[in-house]
Length: 132
Image (cartoon, rainbow, N blue to C red; front, top):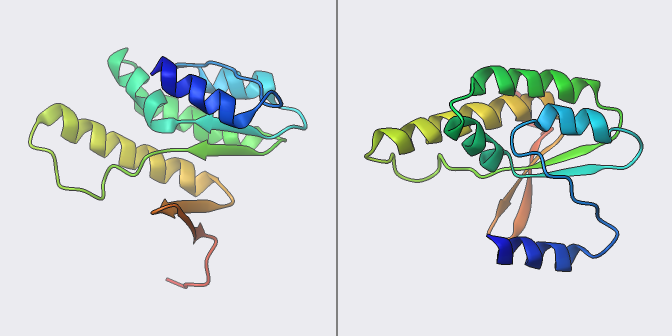
């Protein structure tokens, strides 16, 4: 993981500032809000940290949704789509998959735009021209 982080930092360059918030994402967003955009990388890792700490992840996600609405500067969230594969056979993996899907839906609903990267190509999901 340390090597991956170092590679990401090198690719981004010195203009980016890192802020580590393993569990207090809302606090980090509040503290960093201003004029510059922020990149949260990534929601599923944050969710993993909450689950491992046996925190009330649903309450944390709801708090995040409320915090997103208060932000003045843009926030870009990176997440993983874990629901596109087969349903895992073990209970913990299924629980994580369900929690990640719920988290992604709640955050996506609160965001102005949603993009999905497929094989390196961005696909705009929200807003779209499809009426339901």
